[in-house]
Length: 97
Image 1: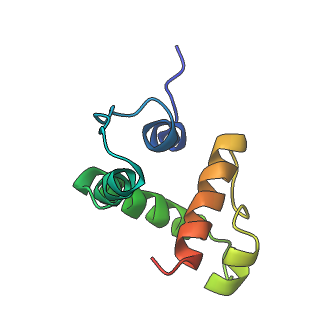
Image 2 (image 1 turned 90 degrees about the vertical axis):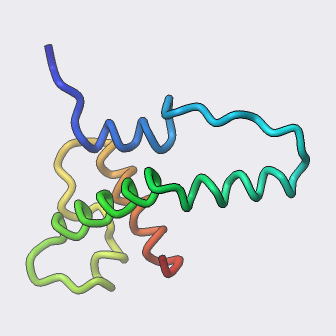
């Protein structure tokens, strides 16, 4: 039996069948506050911190941050999920997080 990769588990948690959030009955303003609460939850902050650390550790030797942002999947080895995570982390870093 093959164990899931840490990358796959992080992607599944972040985008797939992670913990369900209760639906609010409000409109767009309520949705925005729900999204902000999710993004600042301790679990999401830990997930983002781990993903960023993984991405930084996979940066090719001698590359600057700017070079890695220009080619965020450089250093990826394990397929589409790993590349998707690298792209997501790079997007998050570009946004100034």
